Length: 56
Ligand code: FES
Image (cartoon, protein in one colour):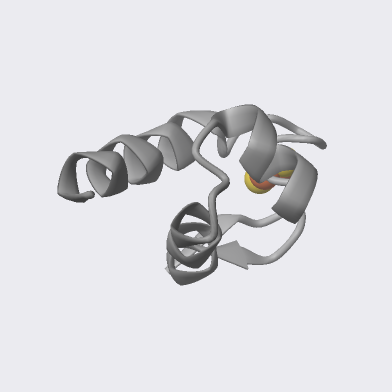
């Protein structure tokens, strides 16, 4: 599912970036550009991040 429409980033891409060590919103933004344009995906990205971190 697409999370960031501005940059075409999916939840799978976000999860794999988290697996590779991007464990903050800032790190995900640096790596995948999520939230760096309109910002509408920040909430959703945070949800994916928190869910994933709870699993680790
Ligand atoms: Fe992610 Fe716009 S939807 S920056």
